[in-house]
Length: 232
Ligand SMILES: [Ca+2]
Ligand SMILES: [Ca+2]
Image 1 (cartoon, rainbow, N blue to C red):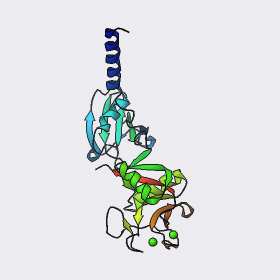
Image 2: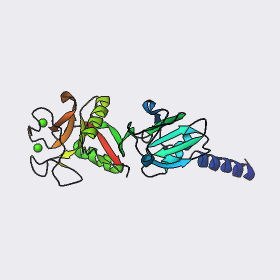
Image 3: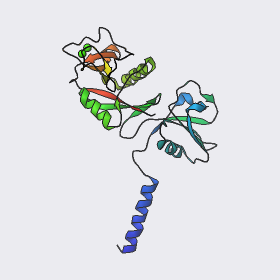
Image 4: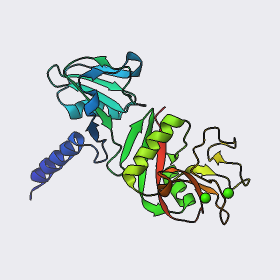
């Protein structure tokens, strides 16, 4: 192959890599229940006209801090980027499809209330699960209220087995904290007769046999786990 042919091929290759920059680009899943509606103004991050495709609209979201949802109108080519959008407070506006982030290709994740939840599908002891989350820029889930607890329970039902979340009483027996804080937990959702510290259990799980109510478990048991990454 002569020199000019090589230069030509190199140019084509670099053009391709510019057009398709990253295999880790985000995946979007259509939110059927929200079709034909727009988010409240306070949830909108940016608006774009003349956006040629859904994936271009998704591209606008990928670079934006806090972006978790896109609204795209095929007919008008209008694209809205938004934070996580829950069902309430949507304005009716025909023609728009609502799509929500499902995380990056390497990790299945779902958005809820300004966090991305990433499911760890390997079974790990609690500290290893936490370290894997930290390496993704996340942490084991911190559950702050009933709504988040119900969301994480439904995610766990999809996983179908007990999962680790981010609570522990390893520092002081019976005093449960989230790993990011030394404060005692305020919201709790223990299963029946839990925590019982059976054979010194210091790590928090959503326990399948209790329909994913909370149970203390031995930290060296291996379970799947859920990481949480805050979007704000
Ligand atoms: Ca304990
Ligand atoms: Ca227990």
